[in-house]
Image (cartoon, rainbow, N blue to C red; front, side, top):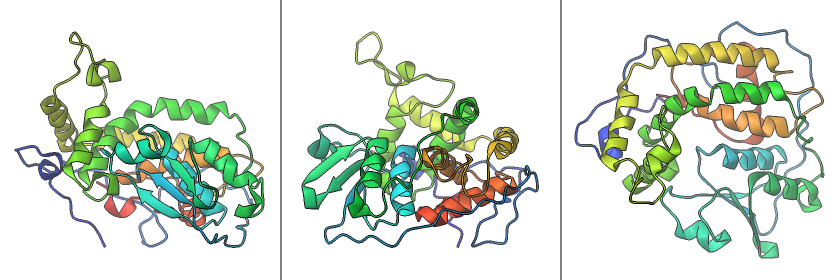
Amino acid sequence: MKVSLVSLAALLGVAAGFSAAPSSIGNTRSVATTSLTSVQLSSTQVDAAPFAKPPRVVREQLPTVYVYDHCPFCVRVRLAMGVKNVKHLIHFLANDDIASPTALVGKKIAPIFELPEDNFVMGESLDIIAKIDTDPRFGPTNQILPASGRKDIKAWQKSVQTLLRTLQRPRYVATGLLPEFQQIDGRHAFIKNHQLPPYEKPEWKGDGTQENPGMDMDVKLKLYAEAMAADPTPLVEDLNARLVELDDMLYSEHYCSEGGFSLDDVDLWARLRSITIVSGVHWPTKLRSYMDNLSALGDVPLYDEMAL
């Protein structure tokens, strides 16, 4: 069921109401639960076997992960735990909640992993993944291969950073559906701390001094509202072309690098998931299958049905 667009004015606390500008690009997502088709622009498919998911692991005291839904570092952990088939509790932190993560690890960060049976708490996504993949209590060990150090994918990620920030950040708060942004305080906390291009973080946030106090909050709200009101067509067309480039780099529809499921996938898929919040994206066939396959394997849903 499609979700109706919530007024960004109500979400952000801006007086003037508006909605996202219509795009001339058709929404051609291809997901397992829809009949929409993806773009037939894909490199040669490799006949690679999918990851063999191990038996379900259910501890008497379930581990808990504290996360933000939109955060790719948090998604890394959720994907890894899903792939390893470890049942766990998910605690979605409000974006303005400083007290909860500080009580756990001494500062506001996510993800956080809590293992009650050991009275153990830790942060940092890759450290958490290393913990669960080397502890036999969570099933077969060393199932997730190390990162391969692929420079081509890292270069691609860097090349689309500004583009994705422009498209994704306003949509995170505009949907009205992500758990960390259910209240205006969480939405404002995100906008306060996350700049939109072309602004850089020092200009947006300031440095706490009288000389550089940062941008006024009303200005930030206005810039987010304008970003959602703008026609996204040129940016989405650019993104579509970039996704064709990435499709050529993908080894198979099951994992991005030759050899099997690895930390390459944990990082890449976690970042690509956020693109599904953008309406009108044309996914090349292999890349779309990759997104759907790992979503199912890791039990982490995509944003297709709430895309703006």
